Image: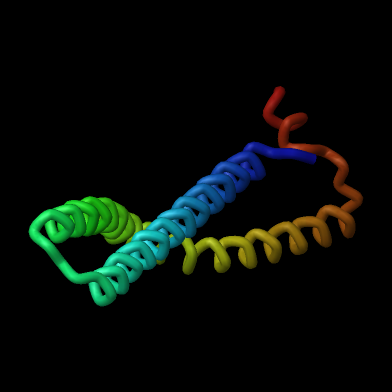
Length: 122
């Protein structure tokens, strides 16, 4: 029996998965750019700098740092939403499971077969 309440829950669940997926993706990008910055630093340690290659390294590093900054800024904006939904969604799941279990017990004890869609049609 699929109700409108089930649909609301499914929409929230979909939003939860979308937010957590995007958050994880941003973390992967940040890690990727952190590794690139580290690799450039290691290259700089090994090479003898000239004016020409120093400028190239500076441009390369600047490009990576700018991309990393964009990812970090997006993570900072998403962090409060992620924290909120991550904390509350688990509580919501448990509350819904308890409500469904209680409802099923009551419906069974009263031999109730009528659905909400049948009631709302009238």
